[in-house]
Every structure is written in structure tokens, then in C-alpha cells.
Image 1 (tube, each protein chain N blue to C red):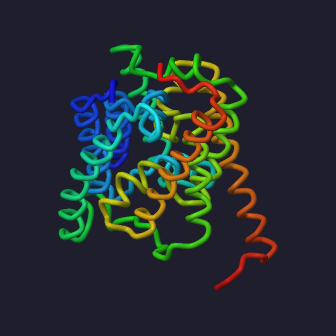
Image 2: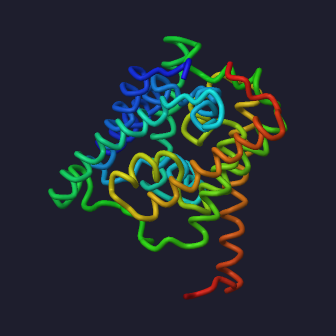
Image 3: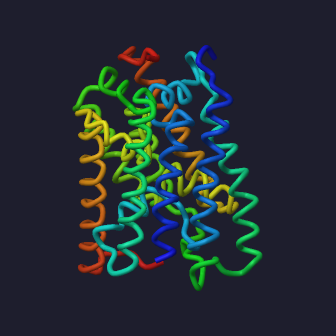
Amino acid sequence: MKRLVVAYVCGLLFAVGLGISGMTHPSKVLAFLDFAGDWDPSLALVMGSGVLVNLVFFRMATRRGAPLLAPSFSLPSKTAVDASLLGGAALFGVGWGLGGFCPGPAIVSVVTGATPVVAFVVAMLASMGVYDWMEARTAATGLEREV
Amino acid sequence: MSHFTPVAATLGGLLLGVASSLLFVANGRILGISGIVGQIPLATGSDRSWRLVFLAGLLTGGLVLLGFDRSMLAFAFASEQTVPVAIVAGALVGFGTRLGNGCTSGHGLCGIARLSKRSIVATLMFVATGALTVFVVRHVLHLGGGPS
């Protein structure tokens, strides 16, 4: 129960943080990515200050050995840079540069009911579903390359 | 640099850090939006519950922003982007973040702070292709793109 309360509070704080920082404005995100135009460095500060807080607390938590409310940390198992990581990040960047939206700000902005925002989020969730379907199919037919 | 907003950016960024640190310190989870939300359909039991509750928190936060100051949310998007562009962009973001195991929050905010090589590389990659896309759209094709 406590873990659910924390998850809810984290979602709420994160959404408010996105709003305050300007990440929910695609025009602001695009201005950050527009190095050749009227560049707006604001988002570097968003990322920088967020990472700074996390550097401190993630380190403290890791030193402690376990989270406060769970038996262990859930961390990604992959450690190697592979083609999926590079290709996925590259595709994500193209979409980010086209729309000025990454997943968090898009989902938070859905409450506006604005048509392009809703269209973005529906397309995003649908393509996540397509990815999962492709993954499941690959795994089922044994086509996944084992390295 | 006409629209540089250093104070709001720093304050907002600190809050993003507090939220992602809290989720990690208390629940041991990485705050990565694409992973948390993207895995809702496949997750089961308590693993699904916390993801749904987190999503509810995000949407509540959206409503708080909407109630507090409507201009904080993306109405600008409507005037700037057409629905077809939004759909293509959304599809690329959805597929790309699942294939690459993360987005701006999971790789950018959390992964870099964990000094994960994968996250650092992914972040450099999506900022690079994002910047390249904006460059092509605005300075090669000269489409839309004026800051609003």
C-alpha cells in the first residue's frame, strides 16, 4: 500500500515538474533542439538539475543496499550498448524532434483533450503495443538471435 | 536565446529529480515513463498496480497544472503541429523508446545519474537525432517551426 502511495505521489510530482520546467511545451523542446536557430538552452538546465538530485540520492540509496519499501532495486539487466539501444534511441529522437514531445509531457498533456496531443499519445501507445507484439512473435518463433 | 527560462527550468528539473529519486529510494524503481506505461498491458498483479497508480498520478498532475495555469500545458502544440505529424511523431516515439529501453526520463534523468553507459549513449543519440530532425525540418525544408 505504501508503495502505491509513493508511486502516485511520484507520478504527480513528476507531472508538475514537467509543467514548471517547460517540458510540456513542444515549442520549448524544439527550441532546445534547434542548435542552428534561436537556441534555447533551458532544457539543459532541466536535465542538469534533475540529474544532480538523482546523482546524490541514487548513490545514497545504492550504498544503503536496498530501497526503503521494497526488498531490492529493480534495475535493467542489460549493460552492453547494442543495436536495439542505438536504433531505438535514434528513432525516438526523430519523433521527439518532429513533435517536440517525449512520453511524459505527452501523457500529462492528454488532460487538455487537444486533438494533436491525443493523436500523438494514441499513436505512441499503439506503436508500443506493436513493438510488444513483434517481440512476442520473435520469441515464439525462435527467431531471436542468441549471442 | 530570447526565451531562456533558467529559474523555471532549474526548479522544474529539481522537482523531476525529487520525484525520480523518491521512486528509487522508496520503491527501488527507475522512473522511466516509457517503461512504466509501456509495460502496463503485459504486467500482472502488483507489478501492474503500481504502474497504473503512477499513471494516475501523472494525469492528476496534469489536471493540477491545468487548474493552476492552463498555459503550462501543450495548447501550443495544436497550432504548431498537424494531426498527421503528431501521429508519425507519436509512433516513432512509442516504438523507439520500447526498442531502446527508455526515454528522456529513464535514460536521461535516471540512467545518466546511475552512470549507466547505455543510458549515456542513448541520451546522446536521441538528442543528436532530435537536433538533426529539427535542423532538417526548419533549416533545410523550411517547414513551420517558428517558436510560439
